[in-house]
Amino acid sequence: MPGWLGRLGAGLTEMSERLDERRAEAEKEHAAADVPVEAAAVPAPRPAPPTPRPDPAHAVPWGVRVAAEAGWRLLVLAGTVWVLMRVISAVQLVVFAFVVALLVTALLQPTVARLMRYGMPRGPSTALTAISGFLVIGLLGWFVTWQVMENIDTLSSQLQNGIDDLRNWLLKSPFHVTDKQINQIAKNLREAVGANTDQITSVGLEGVQVVVEALTGILLVFFSTLFLLYDGRRIWEWFLKLVPAAARPGVAGAGPRAWATLTAYVRGTVLVALIDAIFIGLGIYFLDVPMAVPLAVFIFLFSFIPLVGAVASGALAVVVALVTQGVFTALMTLVVVLAVQQIEGHVLQPFILGRAVRVHPLAVVLTVAAGGMVAGIGGAVVAVPLVAVTNTVVGYLRQYSQQVHDVQEPGRPDAAGTPEPSEDAPENTEGLAHQE
Image (tube, rainbow, N blue to C red; front, top):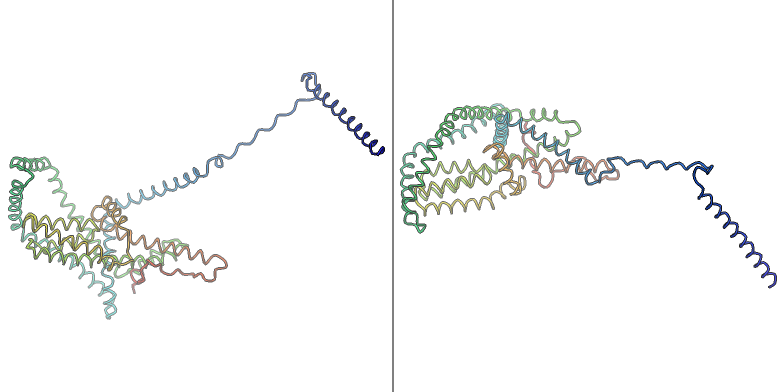
């Protein structure tokens, strides 16, 4: 015990001495800090180097950088589309004639293939099919014009009687329309026509130019159809040479599927339009509506314009029935038109067109509106098949890219090198690229 207490006392003494030494050193440092700079022999400390500024690209938030990258690419794409539209508008007649020739070729090509299977050479079968097709189209136009000219006098008298009946009905109707109000409406119409005489005359003078352009377009369509039917395969092979080599296999596979989609659309549309024209024509014929056959032909032609054409042709038939046969016949005509169009929209189109050209109704409405704004009636006609073909091509290229990516990945022995047709792609790939 005495030894342990002695060692404890020695340790405490040593600790006290160390504390005194540290206290003395701290007092010396405090005293040195109070000395002025001039009196100190120690040089002043160097300032800390400035912190380097970050790269401006890294200072921008990630979301803003992504939005900017996407924005300038969208601007480049919009500029490209604008230039392309300007070029197309400059040669609108040529572009529209070629697109119509593609549609006509899609309709007539199976006939050429059938004649060739029967042993007829390609040249005569192509010429016979093209001439017969355009002859049928010309006969339809001549028949409509002949029927209108034959019945124009009768229709005018019936139109005048219908207007008189409509006026009498308005006078006796519960709408309290007076004879003075009807005369005022007629006066306003005459004044509107008189005020726009110059515009009407200018339109009539421009009719010669329209006729010349129409004849030019018809000739372009005829010759383009003839060459597409006869030499379609070599035209497609020449087009493939313009595609970059890396993208050529995908485009080569997408072409036949796009052609099959276009062929299915044209055939289905012609069949649906023919059924519409037959049944609506029979309905208005049994209702004693004048010019039932020309109206049926108009219904057939207008059916190629999705949505808008059916409404316009049906409204024309109802108006003719109203002014010639009265309100009851007009209502019955409206019932016939609506019934046939409902059967067409819910039964015929899904059954005939199938999934090959399925396009959402909203896409159809927007496409028809955009096509009509850009190129008028012709744009509205070709807009929907263009969207259907684009949908098929994009779907195939997406699947092709995915399967090529699967082939390039290691450890995927089950991946195929050539993509199979998608579920929405048509199985029939014969067409413009596979004409023999």
